[in-house]
Amino acid sequence: MATKDINTADSAFETRTIDQIVDVIATSAPEIRTGLPGRRVASEAENPSGETQMAADVFADELLCDRLGALDGVGEYASEERPESIDVGTGSLSVAVDPLDGSSNLKPNNTMGTIFAVYDAPLPARGHDIIAAGYVLYGPVMTMIIARGGTVDEFVIYDDASYELVREDITLPDDASVYGFGGRVPNWTEEFEAFARDIESDPSRKLRYGGSMIGDVNQILTYGGIFSYPALESAPEGKLRVQFEGYPIGYVLETAGGASSDGTKSLLDVDKPDLHARTPLHIGNASLISKLESALD
Ligand code: F6P
Image (cartoon, rainbow, N blue to C red):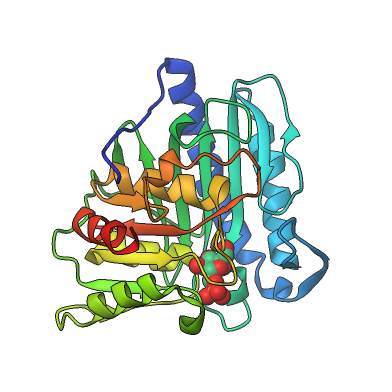
């Protein structure tokens, strides 16, 4: 299970580069959001995981690649939308991005996010190579969660690309009051289904599932609880990607005092050397993640 074993920047140069990356993510978010209305249609291509790309996925990826790639400290850029990572300079840090997480929510106009992870290693990297991670949530308000330097902060991003710190040193509430589980129920393993029934039998907990990981994860960070996209009978590796979703979200949740797991160990300990590898993903309060790992054992 997850213990707090969080790697952070170890030089002024890394710290400055992380700040610049965060600034690019924040100042690009209003443009990504403004670019959505005309891009709620499928592009002609598929992403490396075989999923239909929306025009907005491609737009956000190109914009972030250009801007993050222009930073001196960034040497490599990879995204869920590209088969390979690309060399963008001589910097020592790598950035992995999911430009529009949950883009199937574009058509019904539900929440989506942009996720990023900064690794001080070439890609594909290990979970413990992350030195900062975070996400933008395109909800009724644009917010940004950033884990760096051992703490998690929340910002509001405005339409003019300015942003403001609104919550400092966020920790997961002890009261675990919401849960959300992805995948089709008949496709869950017997053990996971039994665990889910146990979780939902507690009358103090409410189901919250929106179909965009960032929206669902942010519910947990706000109210406490558990979110899982588990291993499925038809997909034992689950759906979510290690480099673009598993490591960054594990890093954010563990920095906030919560826990993460692939079913047996912290997401940060998952060791899969493929850039587009997938993992079952569980995040939330440590007590629930521990219960989950016992249930799946
Ligand atoms: O990245 C994939 C994603 O869109 C996640 O944001 C989300 O949690 C999941 O897929 C939703 O999958 P499903 O459509 O199977 O519920």
